[in-house]
View (cartoon, helix red, strand yellow):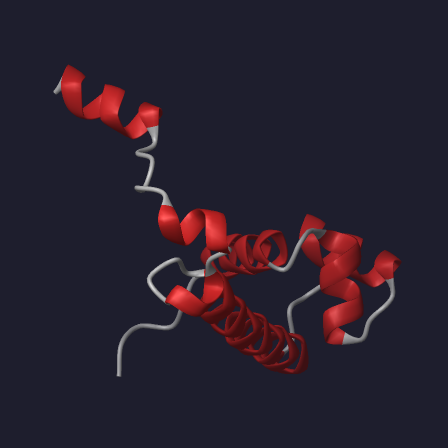
Length: 104
């Protein structure tokens, strides 16, 4: 097994998880704590004990699963996700992506 994580690195990862869960308020709801506790955790004023980490990881997995399901219902690769108008028109390319390709 590798070296234990440094507390500041763990806090940075926790903050990233909070951002991915929609910010402090939604993340607090997702892991079942109040906003004051979340603010203290996010600020590093309170220790991240294992329970907080487990609950955050569980919330991330649930969020990821919801994203996968929604992706399946939005991805244009699946014809059932397209409206009739979208299915009959040629795809439009993102002009920003095309412009970046042209610049390189």
